[in-house]
Each structure stands twice: as structure tokens, then as C-alpha cells.
Amino acid sequence: MMDELAKRYQAVRERITQAALQAGRSPSEVQLLVVSKTFGPDLVAQVAALGQRAFGENYVQEAVDKIAALRHVPGLVWHCIGPLQSNKTRLVAEHFDWVHSVDRLKIAQRLSEQRPAHLPPLHVCLQVNIDGGATKAGVAPAETLALAQAVAALPHLCLRGLMTIPDPVDGFEQQVAVHREAQRLFEALQAALHWPQFDTLSMGMSADLEAAVLAGSSMVRVGTAVFGAR
Ligand SMILES: *Cc1c(COP(=O)(O)O)cnc(C)c1O
Image (cartoon, rainbow, N blue to C red; front, top):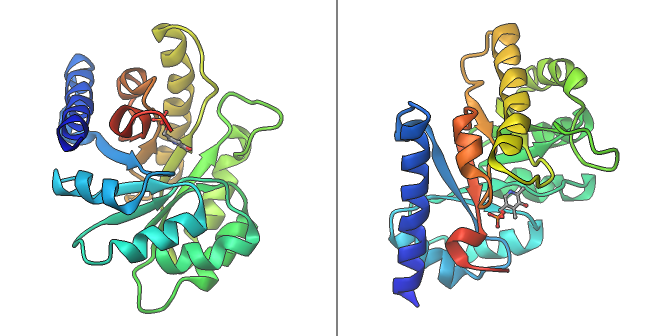
């Protein structure tokens, strides 16, 4: 079991390395966020033993329990990547290091107010609805700059970048085309904001990480390819 997990983890790392080299980028520019939702603390500890530190979680209560169970593992960094309701912001502000799914100012304000004073600012990415599905979470691309400016002004948050979850599309070129939209928006915001910490483009998952890395992703979020099917 451990061997299988180690093999899959190393295979994902190798995919990232190859994708970066193909894109003419340094592999060190692309971070791996291992998405551990639905998998227990034992499996997370096994991946941590391979050197992985950054883990992504979708369900707040599940994550809080897991974070507590793994307190003894030094240096873990927890990223909240799931949809955020107002009644969950306090737990997120108290337990996570990063949030990728901020898509409205009210949620950002609550996270900033509720971030405990003894902790460093909460790192935040804005979730952008890059492919425009009407029912999808995420701020509309045209409204992203205004939201970014408002979030950057909040005292206990550190605005780090953008996150996208495009609907699956067939074919590598089609995947790249969607991710290029996010890359263009990200670069336009970098130019408009002059905000040095705005350095994170969180995009790409198990099925499309190569396309995302080609389009400038700096953080891929990978669950299935590491842990197997949920
Ligand atoms: C579950 C999830 C992932 C990981 O998806 P896989 O296809 O299992 O790699 C990445 N990002 C978000 C926001 C998720 O909810």
C-alpha cells in the first residue's frame, strides 16, 4: 500500500517536472498541492513522510479534525479549496494557512476579522469563474480586479493570486485554451495591482495539470492521481 502511494506520488511529481520542462519553465516554479479530501490522516501522514507539506481540503469540519490529528507532523501547510459559506469562515480563519475559494468581499471580510491575532495573515486566492458557467462559483473575470483591490486592503489577509476550476473539456489544446484565459487575467491583474505577493495561479488537477503548467500555473491541485479514486 505504502509502495503504491509512493509510486503514484512520485509519478505526479514527475508529470509536473516534465510538463514544466516542456513549457520551458523551471520545475521549481510549480508547487504541488496534494488534495486529501475524503482520505484519512493516516494516508496524509504517509504522503507527508515522502516530503509533501502542502495539503488541500474541501470540507471544513473534516479538515479541522484531520489538522488536529496531524498536529505532530511538523511543517504541514493547509489550503482550503472548497466552497465557503459564511457560517464556516471562523473555522477556516482559525485552522487554515491558505484559502483558494474566496469569491466575494463579504467572505473575505469575515475571514480577515476572524483571523486570530497570533497567526500570520491568511493567504488568499480569488476563485474566478473562468469559463462562465452560470451556476458556477467564482467571481466573474470582469469583476476580479475590483474584488482583488478590496481584498488586498484587508488587514489580516494576504492576497496571493487566482484559482480556477474549469469544467472538464476534451483534448489538450482545449484544456490549454481555457487555462490561457486564466493566465491572461492573472497577468493583467499583476500589472494593475503592483502587488509583489500576487504570485500564485492555482490551476490544474489530475486530468489537466500538463495543460495548466503550459499556461503558467504555479500550483496544481492533485487528488485522484496521488490517492486513487475517491
Ligand atoms: C477535488 C479537487 C481537486 C482535485 O481533483 P482531482 O481530479 O482528484 O485531482 C482540485 N481542486 C479542487 C477545487 C477540488 O475540489
